[in-house]
Image 1 (cartoon, one colour):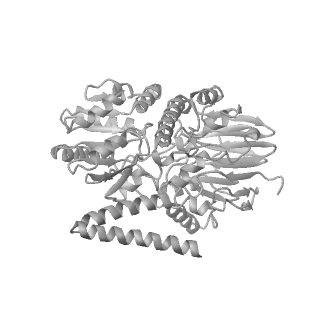
Image 2: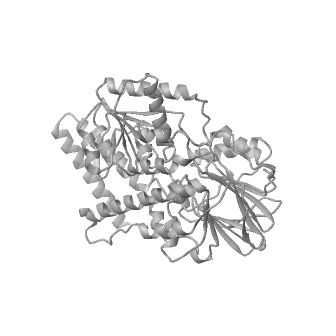
Image 3: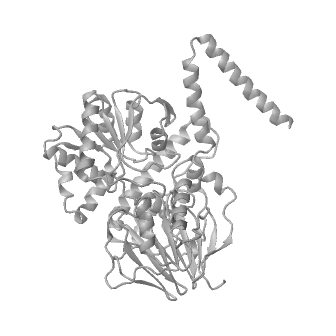
Length: 523
C-alpha cells in the first residue's frame, strides 16, 4: 500500500463548496483546486483555519476552472512565500485575476464591517484572507495549457485537461501517477464536450466526480422557452410597478442572461426597458471573455443595458422602480445585490428571480426556501417580494448527465468517489450507480479523509476525516438556526393581538432561557 498514491479530501466532501483535493504518489504531491467554502458560518470559518496541507510539499496545482469555490483560496498559498506552478486553461487564466481581486475587495469590506460591530468590541480583529499583492504573486506563477496537452511533472507523473463544458475554460483533469490513471471531473456541464483526438477516454483506475445535481433531473429547456419565461417574469413584475432583481454569477450566467435580454429586445418581444448591470466584476469578466465569445462585444455596446460603476450610482437605483437590476453575487452572499434586496424585499410589487443552484446556508437558499424574514448585513428584512426560480440557466449536468459522464469514462477498475454535492444529491447518485451493477460501492468521502488508491481494486480508507465533519456540512448550523428562530419569534410576537400578550410571551421566553441556564450551571 505504501507505493500506491493517496487522495485527501480538503473540501467539496459532503458539501458543494471549498473544492480541494491533495493527491500524492511517486514522490510528487498535486493539489487539484483550492476553493472558498461558502454557506453556513461553520463552513465559512474553515476559510480562516490554517491551510490543511503542508504548503511547501505541493509540487503543482491544477485549477479546473475559475469559480471561487474552486479557486478562491489559491492566493493563500502564495502569501506564505510559496511559488508552485498553477496550471489551467487560457480562458481560466484570463478571468481568474478579476474574480480574485473582487473577492479580496469584498473580504476587506466585510472585515471592516465586522470589526466595527459593537458586539465585537475587545475581540481579536478579523483579517482578509489575502490582498492584491498575494494575487499578483499567484498570477506570476500561472501556466496556461491547452486542452489535451500532456504536462510532465517528473517521476512519471503527468496530467492533461479535458473539456468539461461547465463555463468558459472549465476542465476535467486526467492525472497519471504511480502507474495509475485518475480522472477528476471538476464541474461538469451539459452538452457534448470536445474530445481529444487520438487519446483514450475511459479505462481509469479511479474517478472523482461532482454531484451538484445528483438528485435532480431537469426537463430539457429550449433557449426560446427560457427566453419566453424570462419575458413573462419581466412583464409581470413591471406591470405591478416593482423592480425585477436577478442575482447572477459573474462568469457565464450574467453574459447568457444579457444575451437573452438582447434577443427579447431585438425581436420586439419586450419593449425598450432599462436593464442595469450593477456588477463591476461582471463587466470586467465580460471584457476578458470577448476574445473567446463571438457574440460578446455587443453586450458592452447596447443602449438598453446600463453599466453601473460607483457605489453612489448603485444606491441611486433605490430611488427608481420599473427596472431590471442584475447584480452579484449569484447566491447573495456578497456584492451589491444585498443592498438591493434590503430595499426591495419588503415591497410586494417586486420580484427576485434566481437562475442557479443555491448552496445550503446561503442567503439565496434561505430566500428560495420561503422565509418571511431574512437577516441581511445585520438587518432583519421582511420578505414580501415574490421569490422565483427560472430553470434553464444551469451550467451543471443533472442526475442523468452525471451518470452518463461516469459511464463514458468507464470501465473503472477501482472506485468512483462522489464529491461536490449535498447529502441528498450524493446518496441519490450513489444509488443510481449501484443499480447499474457497474459500480457496486461508490465512495462518499468526508472532509479530511485520506484514501489509498489501489490500481485494480476499490480504494481503501487510510485515515478518518475530521471529527466535526458531519456537523460542518449540515444544511443548518447553530448560527443559521438562531437566525431562523429570531425571525420566527419576531413574526409570532408581532402577530399577537395586543401589547399585553406580547409582553407575556417575551416574559415566558426570558424565563425559559433563565431556567435552561440554571439547569446547565447545576448539572
